[in-house]
Structures are given as structure tokens and as C-alpha cells.
Image (cartoon, rainbow, N blue to C red; front, side, top):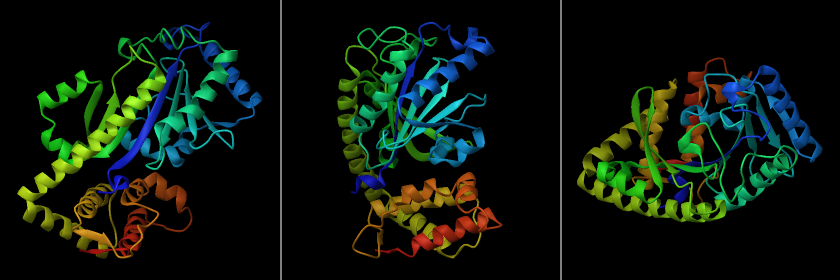
Length: 333
């Protein structure tokens, strides 16, 4: 099965606290402002293109899928968006004055690999650290107000389409994975469980950041192999139910004129499953550049409003049209 139809997206998060500042809860507003201005100056002086984002801009940017991932915070924190030729192959978001002072967050596409994106992110992290020294260091780890976040200060995670994994993710299996350094989170959307699992790194001691990246990348490959096997097993036991649900969703999406986000996302989940199981297939020999995962990320209200500004009056109607256009490339196998 094509890995692009399994991996939704991945994330690198690096947290640091700056030596001369207390933890955020004890920082004054002046200290927060001073830290923010210092970080912007360091990054700009190093030749990176950066801008301080307002919340609506962040939600309309490529970071929009963090709404689904549960990353958008209730409180307002300054967010620095770093882009440009020096930051490749992904954009970096620095959330400042949040718990550990600086949270570097990078979201990877399915074609990107942790190691190449980490190398570029680490350059920005080191660049800031040279002017604003961090508490502790790479060898001994980083301090944090949350004990579970002490240690390396880096977390890796991947969100994958995990119907097969969900079937076997009982308490014993989850516990075994935790012992091996992986946390498995079932994800909810509007109080309803969805067919995606977030797998995050749990190890923070006994290895370097580079070693963690190599280990986690290999682990995700193992999870994907496991997911493929378990999905096929589950499908073979429930073939009629699967076929009916997938083809019903395919028919509804092909002819709908208006779709809410929830119903569209859930039915696209079925389309994704259908493509993975070869119940559906692309009508051309070459896989379209945009995958169903990309399509699912593009149908959020905020994304449609940002990308189709002035072109559609009704977001639900626009969503239905976007999906119908895509499904012209898909047919029943």
C-alpha cells in the first residue's frame, strides 16, 4: 500500500528555555516582550525571513491542520513564522513565552523525512541559542516546568490512518509500545473518535536527538507495516460492511451540493480506506499530485475561506465542489 495514503502528517517539536529568564508563569509582561523582541532580532540578523503572526493569519497558513491536531492554544502567545531560502524544506513556527519560553514546531508533509527537516530546524534553534543561551545543554537535557517534558526537549510525532492499529490497540499493546518509547493516542473530533492514531516519541533520556530521530523514523516504518497487515485482516473479516460503507460515501460525495466539515471528513475517511484496500482506484495510471490526505486538510472552514476568498459565498457548497472535482479522478475498482 502507498505510504502517502497512510501518513497524514508528522511533527517535530523542540522546546527550550532561555537562561536568564524565569519560567513563563513567573515572567512579567515586560520580560515576555523583551524575549520576543530579542528572538526576532536574532533571527532577522541571521538572515532568516520572519514575521510575527496574528492568530487569524496562523489559522489560515499552512499550520491550519494543527486545529485538528489539537495544537491551537486557548491563550494567545506570540508566534514567529520563519520562512525563506535558508529554511528548507519546511517552515518553522516559534511559539514564544509558552511554558518553556520557546517552542519550535515544524509540520512535515508525507514526502519529507525527519532527519532533513530536523537539521534545518536545529540551525535556527542553535542560532537563537548562541545569542540567548539555553538552560542546560544537548548532553544533559533541558529544564522544563513539566517533568514529562524534561530531558532532550524534542518530541517527534506522526499521525497515521490507523484503522488496523486501532483494532489491536488494546491496553496490553499500548503498554508494550510505551515500554519501547512510543505513545499512541486515539484522536477525537467533536467528541467522536476518528480513524487516525497519533504516535509520539516518549524517550527523552539515554540517547541524542539524532539517535532519537533515526530510531523514531524506523519505528514509524514498522507501525505502517503493522497497520497494513492488520487492516487487511480486519477487512477480510468484515468485507461486506466495508464495501457498502465505502461505496455509499463515494456516491454521496460525488453528487452532494453542500457538505459540512464533519460529514465530509468522515466520508473522505471512507474514500481513503477504499483506496488503500483497492475498492476504489485512481482513474489514471499516475497517482494525482494531491492525495486524499491533502484533500482532507484542505476542507477546513478556515482554509477554504483563506484559499477561495472572494470566489465562493457558501463554504459548505465550496467544500462539496472541491471534493467532487477531486473525485472525478477516482472510480470504483
